[in-house]
Length: 192
Image (cartoon, rainbow, N blue to C red; front, side):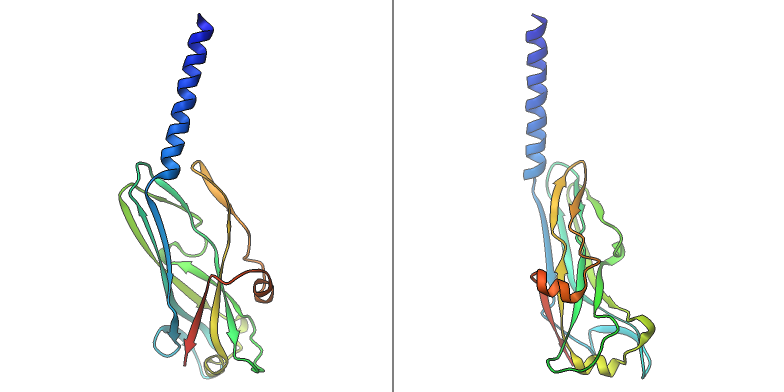
């Protein structure tokens, strides 16, 4: 008799766990990444540069919208987005660095997991910031030779309501390797 009660109790617990996980994974949660198609180097960017060198140049390149209309708080894993500067064909300019990271507004580039409460609608600006090492390229040289930026995103490998998802690590790949091995998430053209 005890065995029947134990088996029944365990069966009810298993059904409840499966039901809760089913509701969690099918809850109404939307994620939308949107990017600009083009940016103007003279109007859309904030910068700090002298005639000879750039300290930094940055621009809002898109938005991330997260909406949770489900029954549980959603654990959202922020992807890593890497950008690469694409030179004009035939350009002989040597960039000191052609790669940059994209930050998610106030989350920055290091925050990897955020909790989205039920009924929340959160928006984050995606900001690209290029800071060449040693400030060894001029703004005019950059404006005349860079025609677009390619954005690459890490792919989610696994997800769990109990912890962070595992993403492939693209932060340490160079732009040439990204170009060969990955399809760009978005190509944004730069207007002079």
